Amino acid sequence: MFDSEFCEKRCPICTRARRGSRIAKILQSVELLLTGGGCPWGRARMRRYGVRPDQPVPASALESNSEELS
Image (cartoon, rainbow, N blue to C red; front, side, top):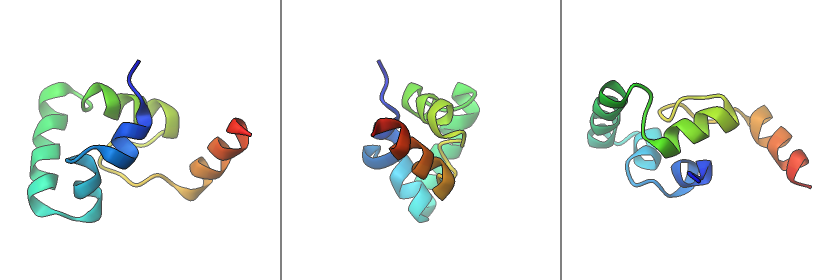
């Protein structure tokens, strides 16, 4: 139901926070504290890639995911 790709590529808070925006990082840290792990899309990203919404996805996780899809 909740797509991990939204958090990875389109979420206005998470994508900006991972790029280094100070305001987005503050909003994201508040969200992580209040929700206990992030929004549903962030939790879906954590299940799929194994990293929290505020962390970049390791290259190895991206490679293994592309192999599964082919």
